Image (cartoon, rainbow, N blue to C red; front, side):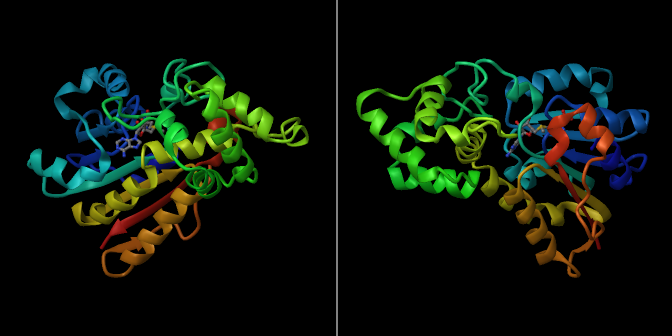
Length: 288
Ligand SMILES: C[S@@+](CC[C@H](N)C(=O)[O-])C[C@H]1O[C@@H](n2cnc3c(N)ncnc32)[C@H](O)[C@@H]1O
């Protein structure tokens, strides 16, 4: 939803923009191109590998760009350290980058055998293998149900706990195999969404504390915007979108004007070109 973000952000020459999820630098690059470099970008990401790609992507705008490895829940502290009081716009493009999703070694996807890792920040101690290996059956069930809306949550948790008594579940393939046994055949075949998608997504959200980080970060973000500065949030999961909507509503009238009365979805054309965009939802608000 790059075009939409560029339009809604209402970029101004000389402005300072905080890209909370810089990833491979696509959004930041588009802002810099649009303004022919006459803006400053502060780009944050938890993922060191992503930041390396972003620094390549943005190398011709080195002077205007500051890239920082950090969790966006610390955005107030980050701006303070950069001696920036207020910014003209903040972007969140949540979820995983294509680089993360397509990595054959980081365990985000069940398409490859890899350690059950799923950390965006590789210096973090907790991995998905810890959750699968150590949480109680009830805790696993709750994660699969609440964060993945998985209808077989209870059975999958039961099978995991049974399996790990004999064999540790250490890889994506180990987990996939347990799920294959837990989910009835009828619900595994011919579905639009692969039967492991929701459980993998739930574990990833939990490992990276994605919902909590978003809640904390948004709570601080509105006070870091200049008057008429805008915050654009692209989410890919209904629970994320619910948090965005709720945080916007809490700040409505006192701090924010909500500009997107209805959530904005990607165009059919974008979804055709990039099917991963199909669940994207954009909300935008402006500082009063
Ligand atoms: C969908 S990608 C962003 C893609 C980016 N907009 C681009 O154009 O290349 C999401 C990125 O957000 C990062 N991320 C997710 N949660 C984060 C957090 N709490 N703090 C910092 N970065 C985070 C991920 O590591 C990932 O690189």
